[in-house]
Length: 410
Ligand code: MLT
Image (cartoon, rainbow, N blue to C red; front, top):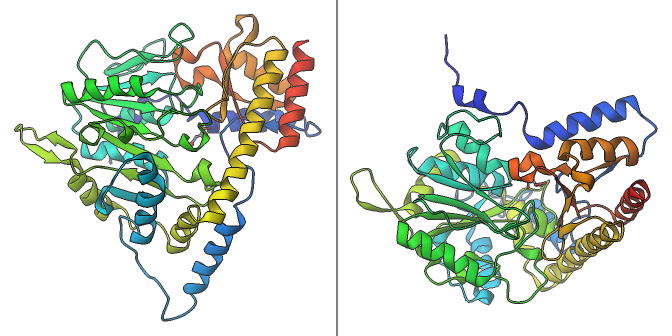
């Protein structure tokens, strides 16, 4: 009989967001009249910008004609998109990248999971706590861990607590680790890292021959000046960091699917025998073997994000979401809650009132306010006692949700 991958059995029953969906469905089935407002999963609600839609349509039309028809594209992505990203997304930050260093994909979630393919199992991996659950769970799936203990920490991973006391900023590990996941602006806490803080991570990585997995999926939501949008703004990061970026939240592509991963050519890791080897080559080999690229119309739509029109249009949508974030943050503060995030990130991380557990607060808001957020403990043990609200809702729903929560807590 075929053997399964036992590592999957070490995981908690369900991935966080489907579990929330299950609880919400049970509630709505029992209360069909309730108008439930969902601010749980960070899924966008506003339509694609007109310039993006135009490019998308034109690219679909290209496929209808023999001379403009496109079959398989390059596994790494079309140069028209990669070169646009080099010019428009990275050059303005003072970062110069080569075409061969950017890989287009269908999502950062997949990339930050798949990247583990090119790293040996005996690497010591550090993740923040709380954290985007994909980093934790994919390390369990590949077999890098033992079982979870009663607190929910998996044996074999190094957890970096991000708490109210340390301003949700993880301390540099005191032990030597080989891979560190960082996410800024942070999901779920909404905090950002300064240049100085990131420099400490880069210095640590260079000194320890570690690799940083830098998830910058929310960089477009930074509103304050001086906060780095890319790890490569830090000197030396090209020798120690892989960066993940996404069109999902930046341009409303959660259903369209497009992302990019940067693996600089200067980034090396050692073979078992100690020889320095290019991770870019390995990732290229992995992608060419296991992935056939993102569809041509989607990449055309993604490139249109960086047209003058497209850029101006997506900024309006980003401003719309960040105004939602302000309304949530200020509304909940006025209700007496302690609230973090929501200034440079589309997530509001709030402290549950009266020391209530995250899931109890989730159940309370669902049953009494018909509002859905994400329990902080779902992101890791240090998220207990916190609750995340997403700013990606419709304005009307956001205003109504804040009103209901305020009335409930009054
Ligand atoms: C979230 O809500 O944390 C995100 O939407 C999840 C994701 O991007 O996969």
